[in-house]
Amino acid sequence: MKHPICPRCDAQEIVKSGIVNERQRYRCKKCSYYFSVNKIGKNIDSYYVTKALQLYIEGISYREIERILGVSHVSVMNWVRKYKIKAPEQTEYHPTYKIFNHAELVDYLKNGGNLKGAGMMITELGDKYMMIKWKRFKE
Image (tube, rainbow, N blue to C red; front, side, top):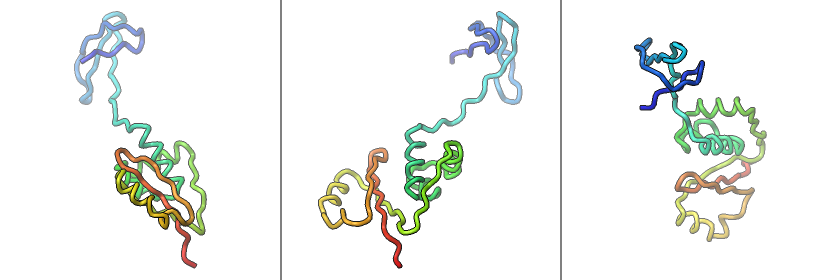
C-alpha cells in the first residue's frame, strides 16, 4: 500500500503512528505533523448519475430509477437537489418504459405500429436498451 503525502508540507517521508477511532494515523518525518487519511467512500460512476437525472427529467419516479439502475433512491434525490433539477409538470402524458436487449429492440422497432403515439426515447443502459414511451392519460 502506498503511504499518503503530508497535508502540511507535501513530504513523502511518512511513517505509521498508531490507530485512533479505528483509523490509521501517520506522522511526517520532515515536519513531525500527525494526521489521519480520510476514508474513501463509495464513488458512483458519473454515467449512473447522468442516467438517473435523465430518467428523473423524463418523469420516472425515484423508486423506479432505483429499480432500473440499482442506485439508491436517496442518492437520486440527493443528486436532484445538488444539481437543482426540476422535472417538467406532465398533466396529459405519463411515461412507460421497457428494457430490451439488442435483438428484442430491433424486433420491436420493425413493427410500425409500435412507433406511433405520443413519442419515445431510446437510451443505452449498460448492455441493454431502455425505451421510454409517453402515453396520454385516459380522459
